[in-house]
Image (cartoon, rainbow, N blue to C red; front, side, top):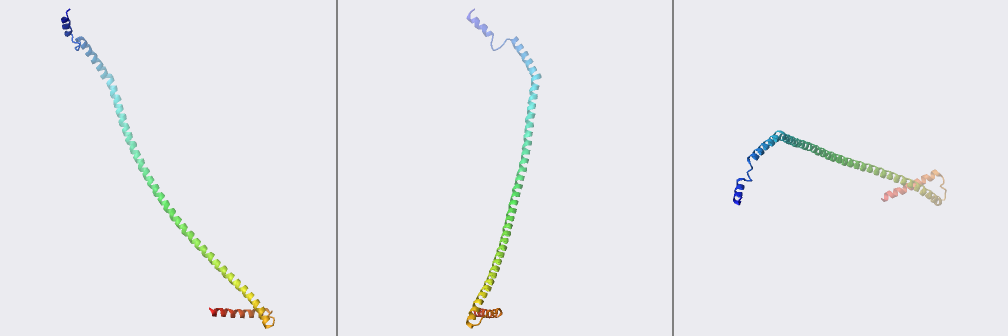
Length: 181
């Protein structure tokens, strides 16, 4: 065969166009596969997709519910926190007031004790002064009696007479001291 005839025969059979019997068999096979897919596989795929869509929507609803609950819990927490802060401030104020009252009470008690101590000190000083004055009066009286006895030349041992002389002498000294002031 000549190369031209062979070229013409090849042109008659186009490799892009399959023979008609193959085209019919392929079309029948496609319809069978498509029908099988439409009857068996497509409902299962739709069912899975629907379940997934429901799960996603349910998850979104659960997430929204959880978010709402979390928001509610957050509000409760904030309210409790504000209440706790208010309670702490109230307790702190009460403690300050109690502390101030206790300080005032302790100051008053200290002032009272100080006044008692000062009064007791004054009373003790007065008692000591009186005791010293009495002891001094007796000592001065004794010395004065001894001296007067030596000057007068007579014994002033008589106790009643001695007391009168001493008292008269001391009274005169006190009058002179007051007159000098």
